[in-house]
Length: 580
Ligand code: ADP
Image (cartoon, rainbow, N blue to C red; front, side):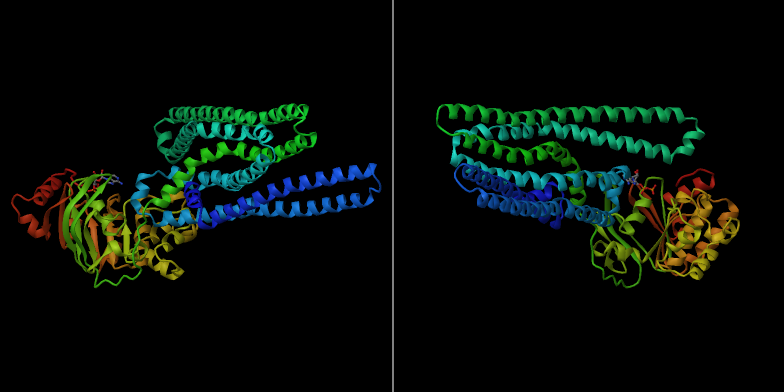
C-alpha cells in the first residue's frame, strides 16, 4: 500500500519502485553497519587503552586492526550496493519512463494533443523526467532508509538512556514537521515556476514559428520585448521560489543541529550529577553524527521532492488519460463508411449531433456546408482520430471504436490541406506513405501525382532536402507530395480535404489528374469547397450546424426548390464564398 502510493506519487514504473525499495534497504543497512561498526571499534579501542596500562597490548592491538580492516571491507561493500541501487539503477528508470511516456503519447487520442500545447508536452517528456530523476536517485531511498534506520537507532538510544535520547533526537521531528508544514508553499511556488517556464518556451516557439510573418509585418521589436518580459518574469519567480525553499531548508537544518548542543548540555549535567559517565555522552555524540548525516542529504533535497510533485502529477496525468485501444483484427466486409447517429463534442461544445449517412465504396461522397458546420470533424471521426461521444461509425460493418487506431489507419489515405512535411529529401517525404517502399514505387507514385515537374527543377531532384516542414515548397507542391504519399499507400479509403484549394489553374488541372488516379474504386469522403468537385460527386451530404441538412445526388439536390444546397450553389456561382 505504502509503496503503491510512492509509485503513483513519484510516477515510477513497477521496476523503478522495486529499485527504490532496494535502495531503501541498502540505506538502512549502510546506516546500521556504520553505527554498529563505530560502536564496536570504540569498545575495542577502550579495551586496547586498558591493556596499555595493564600488561601486553599486542593481542588487542592486532584485534583492533583486524576488526577495523573487516569493518572497512564490509562498509565499502554495503556502500557500493547502496550506490548501485540508488544511482546506477535509476538511470535505467529514466529511460523506461521516457519510453513508456512516448509509447503512451503515441496511443493517446488526437484530441489530447489539441488540448495540450507542444511546449508543455516536450517539457513533460524532458524537463519533468529530469527533475524526477534527481528525486528518484538522490532523495527517496535516502529519506525512507534514513527514517527506518533512525527509528531503529532511536529505539536503541531510548532503551539505553531516554534523557540523552530525547536531547539528541528532538530536532529531527521538529525539522521535518517544519518542512512538511511548508509543503503547500513549495507547491504553489513550483506551480508558478512551471507555468512561467512553459510561457517562456511557448513564447520562443511562437516567435520562431512565425518569424516570417513577424518580419514581414515589422513586429520584431514588439515580439522580442514581450519575450524579454516573459523571461524576466520567469527569473523573478524562480528567484522567489529558491529563496522560499532556502529559508525553510536552512531553518530545518539549524533546528536539527541544535540537537548537538542539547545533547552536550544534557550529557554534561548528567555527568556532573553522577548519573552517567563520559563514555555515554561520547557514544550519543557518535550516534548523532550518523543520524544527522543521511538526513542532511535528504533535507537538502526534500524541497526538491516537494517541488517534483508538480512534475510527477503531470507525468501521471499522461498515464491516466485513457488511450485509444482496440482489437488488431480488422476484417471489414468492403469499405463503406456508415455514420449512425453520431454526436461529438470538443470540450463540451457539441459540433456533430445525430449525424447519419453512408459513404459507399467506389463512390465519391462530398461533405459540403458553411464554414464551421463540422465537415473536418466528420472526416476526423471517420478515421477515429477522435472517438465519437454517441452513435457509431462503421467501416464495412465493423464499429471502428473497437479497432486499434494503427491497424484501422492502414486502410486510410488522407490528403488534408495542412500537409505535414519533414526536414528530409522529397523522396523520403513521399516514402512516408508506405513503409519500406522501393525507390521505383516512390518514383512511380510521384510521377502519377505530377511531382516530376517541380522536382526536376530542384538542385538534386528527389534527393533535395525540403527544409523544415517543407519551407522551401509552394502550397501546390506540398499538396502534390501529399497526394503522391496517398497514391503510394493505395489504401481503400481516401479522406480528402479538398486538396486543390490553394492551387492556381494550371496546377489544379495537374493535381486533379493525379487525384482521379488516386480515387478510382475507393471509398472517398471529400470535404468539398468548390462546385467542380461537388458536381462530380456521386453523393452530397450537406451539413449545417453539425446536422445533416440534406443528402442526395447533386442532380437531386439541385431540384429541391427550397434546398440549402441549391441556395448555396446559386450564391457561389454569383461569386460569394460560402464554404471555406
Ligand atoms: P468545418 O470543417 O465545416 O469548417 P470543423 O469541423 O472544422 O468545421 O469545425 C466545427 C466546429 O468545431 C467549429 O466551431 C470549430 O471552431 C470547432 N473545432 C474544430 N476543431 C476544434 C478543436 N480541435 N477544438 C475545439 N473546437 C474545434
